[in-house]
Amino acid sequence: MKPSIPKGTRDFTPVEMARRNYIFDTIRGVFRLFGYSHIETPSMENLSTLMGKYGEEGDKLLFKIQNSGDYMSGLTDEELLSRNSLKLASKFCEKGLRYDLTVPFARFVVMHREELQFPFKRFQIQPVWRADRPQKGRYREFYQCDADVVGSDSLLYEIELIQMIDMVFSKFGVRVAIKLNNRKILAGIAESIGQADKIVDITVAIDKLDKIGLDGVNAELADKGLPQDAINKLQPIIKLTGSNSQKLDTIATVLAGSENGLKGVEECRFILDGATKLGLNNQLELDLTLARGLNYYTGAIFEVKALDVEIGSISGGGRYDNLTGIFGLPGVSGVGISFGADRIYDVLTQLDLYPKEAQGGVKVLFLNLGEQEAAFCMGLLAQLRAHGISAEIYPDAAKMKKQMSYANAGAVPYVAIVGSDELAQGVVTLKDMQTGEQRTMGSDPFVSFFTEK
Image (cartoon, rainbow, N blue to C red; front, side, top):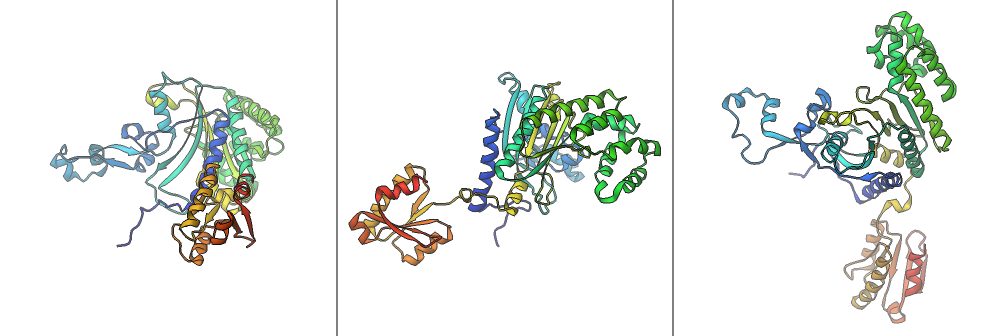
């Protein structure tokens, strides 16, 4: 029987891991630059921590872990014969694999609140698991890269998160649009037209303006059950144009009677003005069609789209008001972002933006041409490694062709050759595997060639 891996999981080759580590290291470096502390939480949590936090559908997607030992001993015959899988699972599964990093973070904050200094800024880069149906771009095991700050209502953190998004994608060389909206504005719009329960339908319809035109949007709104007077009131919102500031002025006029909506306008104005003054490399735009996580977010909402590749959101986040309330610590406000590492990987691959050093691998391979020659090479190898240069020696004195094939297969850029002539003179012949050029040099210049690059 051929070995296999579970559906929705992946192996990563050395080249893929070098690229993934480039992504993680870049994001991690920006998180640290802004003062976020690194934490990790266990892969598994108590099911009592996870259940009921993601809605009914989310509960079904939790990977549950069977108790060790005789897990069926506490079950009655009646329970066994009932074949009620959910009920049975609750009896012999006390733990589950984490579904995201947010709920474990909330649990972490509540458990460690006495030792934490608030506001608390943390980042986490770890895998999560979802028992979803695998399909292209959707996996059962994948990484999340989250940064959150809890314990402060300050909008300076929203500005900081926009700076972080801008810096990460600037470092990657990816042009993005950073989109901003506010939950309070969306609530205010729905409230001002008397359709508080229709906000998702409204944003979905407005989002299609470019594709189906104004008449098409209005027709869709009518299909969703919005009365004509509500559709009429929405016209300035649907036709919203101009700069971020002009858009906010228009929204403020429409929301004149909504205190909550106007608060959202002022929050957006503060964030947009503050972030723009910092001189971002990427465009920042107000987008009223952005409605992610409506039940979860309470203030600013972010989403990031790549401009040169057709792909979904590659980063997102927002402000939430009661993260820790689910664990008995109410009133702790937070704001955070998450980078989609798998989608970023696809974007960098499609745009061919990985730097050469992100390809990983060995910089120089020493050929093995005999016992004494190998001993001489080992000394140079130790010097290179002491300077942080990745290098190796072929283990056996095999045929030259076999050793060169090994170098080519590993995309090694340089091969160091020490034969009997070189050994007698105390020199090394260095071959550039890309150009085929060879040069002979002494030990010190050889080491300097790699360390001074």
